[in-house]
Amino acid sequence: MKKIIRNSIYTALAVAGLSMSSCDKFLDVNDDPNNPSKVEAASRIAGAISTTSGAAQWRATRELAGVMQYGGLQTASSGGYAAANWRFTASYFAWQNAYVITMPNAVDLIVLGEEEGNPHFVGVGKTLLALNFGLLTAQYGDIVVDDFYDGKGMISLVPKFNTQKEVYERLQSMLDEAIAAFERTDNKRDLNVKNGDIMYQGDVAKWKKFAWALKARYYNHLSKKTGLYDADKVITACQNAFNGDGMDAEFPYLADGLLVDQNPWSSWGGFESLTNPRYFAWTQFFVNMLTSFPVTNNLYQDPRISKIMKPAESDGQYRGPGSGAFISNGQGVLANGSPGDATKTKPEDYGRFSKSGFYTNTTSPFGFITYSEVKLIEAEARLRKGDKPGALAAYEEGVKSNMRKLGVSSADINAYWAAQVADNLSGHFDQVKTGLSHIMRQKHISLCLNPETWMDMRRMDYSADIYGPSLKRPANLNTTIFDPANNSQWIQAMVYETNEQNRNPEAVGDNTEKYRLLTPLWIHKPE
Image (tube, rainbow, N blue to C red; front, side, top):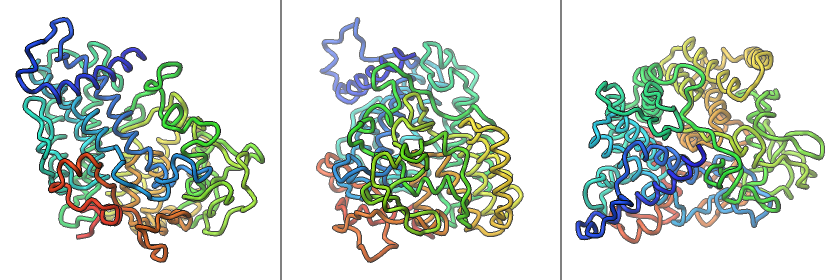
């Protein structure tokens, strides 16, 4: 399997480069029949999956680990310092990784599937393409969709941007087309005929549910758009999506291979450094998520905490630095909003971030979308609709399914749930805001390190009522852009990359940090 993933990544990169540089006919005169530029769909699927994870999603999450307040810093020279303190510029490369490295693989998978008469490969390509477009629009807003590479013609170096509203329309159409492709019965080759389906091993029913899960996610993103949000559409999509454990859209990384075989949070990108890693420890904000209940902020240790992170070597306690602060500043703000222990300034007072547990070990999967997320999306839609019993039932399954996934015992799951019920869980679901506090905090745990949690934080207006009083702006805030006296001013979007700004300035528009970082995306503006 290592060889498949490794070779597929390199093939994908090479073929993506060929696809985008060899469209002119004059480049075809020296074609080598022993080294073809076109590879069959069955040989492209592993590359499309793995680059979507390792190149696109992870690159779009590496800096966001600080923005979402998962990762804490050791010193000002830590690689994550700029990101954790919202010092973003046009050198943020998620755009390039998605458009240049990743998405041409998905497009070519669609084109090859159509040429070969294999609609299931078309479905995979469209599902992954929708995932990538969704990832990009969540970070940038308006993006290139209609003018993107189509696998057949020349690439436009000055493509038109689609508005974010148009992007969401395209996402749903693309996923509808993927679902229709998965339902076709005239497919000629199994998705895993060359062992390339490293996620579902050729199980088309699971791919179809994956597409429905993305539909639910994108419908749910419209929660601030009163004229567009439809709770029933969200619920229907959830009912057609994952309906049990073991269906998550993810694949396990591998140990003892090249770095691209291993979970990037453990093996590369500066996280593995023993002296000054990009992120040193889990933040106290995230520790609070796992040691207190929503709404009341009453203390209770979630049994998942030992599965996700390690305690401090000095005293066996779980703690973290504040967002944007350093361990020399001591422990971050506690769950009730009071200061943490300022005397905890040594490395051994904190558990390390990398290789610490379920989400950051070398072989840990880095999921696209999970059964737990689907149930928590359903819980939100039912809560907004006024279906309290349905919301509670979906919420319970969303929480418990993530606990089962992390290997929590039945006894600990039941004890945790009983404690939540005793903390007035049912009463909290009488109101949308307090119900959302439960749902969003559980999503922050169960979607740990997934960029979707940043979408949620912005949808919830970075509300301390939702996330708890320990949600604070970074200690070393970028005051060139953000007003230190205005605590309601939070980071909203990313800056388009320099190469796009220089090549296509009319489409990009105002790309200053002042405008991009401060301006809410269309999806986050109430109407």
